[in-house]
Image (cartoon, rainbow, N blue to C red):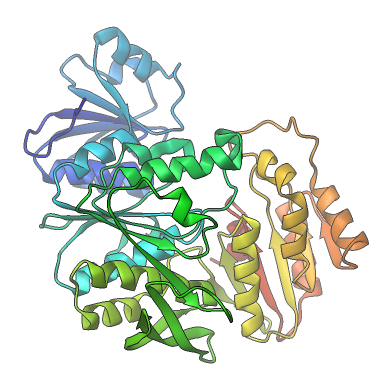
Length: 465
């Protein structure tokens, strides 16, 4: 059942309105004439912005915040079933939907819906797609899983029939979306605390692909194993893409040739369709993984009728999102980088990018994300980290979990020392890690804080942010 139609304004209450994504959609509904209210735990810059736009925000989540004249209550995944606002809404018979369902309903109000999915590269690829769409004059409404300075945040409110969103697979949330054009960058074992096993995860991506109508379009990364068999029953047109091809690789629909990297590690290449050169692409973000991401975006855009110059210029304008190989500053001749990488594939790509910049030594402060992922991918995590010179491991970021897996950060350090002969350390507090880094790092080193939790605080503290 559809609860939100942009053509029929209602009174909507957002439980957890101060979140970066929820606040963006609250502003979108406000712009479309909806009566929007909401609540959050405490006041913030985000809630102040909402209040300045005319949205009433309640501080503290209480049952009395929810009144009988509310048509729909929207909540984040972090809101528990026993939340007093949800409990009271149920008592009043108010429809309750989560953020993913809200997004799905909103997408039905747009004609052209771009959704960027995949285990890795979603945020970067979505950002690239957004800037290409803007460059092409399509004036999209967009939602992103990171902060993109070029749009002033993670949400942009356009005035057209084009919508673009980062589509996350966790808890099957993207299965509530309505894409007409999509990218699946790659599929690796991830979020198995929810999916149970890799096969279930792969089938979730198949279900996502099947949401695209027969006249729609899907760009699929060539790195996905058994992709032809996996997507054989998908009705829309499928194109394949890759970065620079390995010798003997099967030719995808789009790929990169003559790839070079400048002094900042940013790729330049010839975009090739089949075996025919399309044109030259310059990137403003480092790493071979971003070459691949950009080819996927270029493929989808060109096959959607967007001209090459808009693709070329949009890709060049992408300079990265926050927490994606983000330079935080320098201290004592040490370059400090922060990166969101928390899956071994992402970690390896980040470390490879860092190596391409030729630091004297590469020091990685790693915060593993969730006990289940750490236990399942412990060996792969250690292999990725072994590519650094010095590794510092923090406490595992629990997120939504309790440690029933018997996994500890000391186990990672032990493997790095005994199997790989690496200089590896564990400290229980960020303060100890900051002191260690100040003492250990020297001019010419690169220090990367890495992980999906709050490890960025170390980089911020070291660089005075």
